Length: 246
Image (cartoon, rainbow, N blue to C red; front, top):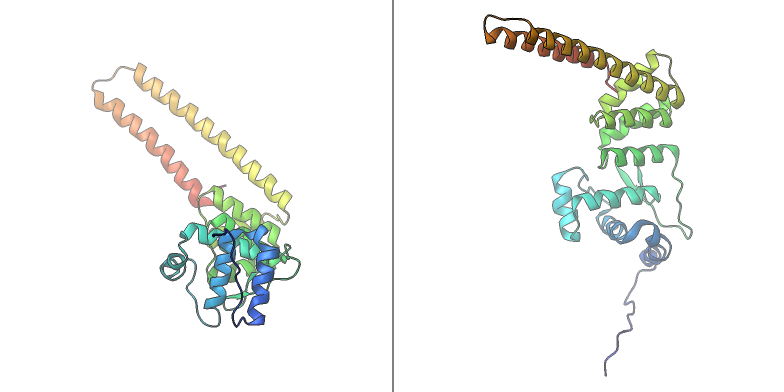
């Protein structure tokens, strides 16, 4: 006679660790999902010493491979642990927190900033990046830092130096709120589109004039077109060097 169910007992279970399992499965699993729960248990196993950085190659070899998890999935699981305050940054790394009877879903402003930055970057932050993010928050506030990070993502420049430059530009303009920052971004993009449209119109006029005017050789038209394109590229390069491109 067979059955679809079996009795599974605990043999020599340690009460301290069993509490973590009980609350993790009953309270947190619906919020974090099975991969984050598995990662949390494995990180508990690794805790007490050094562990590979999630951004390193060792992370894939020492964490993802044993768990049968892709690096991308492990990073998403890492972010979910942070969202639920099960994994919090410290001065020299990260700390694993015990699950509570009622899941904690509201991290501090500092924790929220780091979680959101990791979502934007698509990977966990390095310790240097965490330190810079904390410095930015103290100087500008976490909401303005996130607004600057959004600018960096739009520019495909996911880096703390770029975020710093955006914040410094805003500071020089006297911008200290998200609303002011959004207005500045909108104004910049509008002015940039207007300049590009004006340059495009001039380029078309030059191109049509060269095509309609008589020339002694075909190389003359080619050279003039090249000069126009070179000027456009040089202007765009000067704009990029002159400040942060929204």
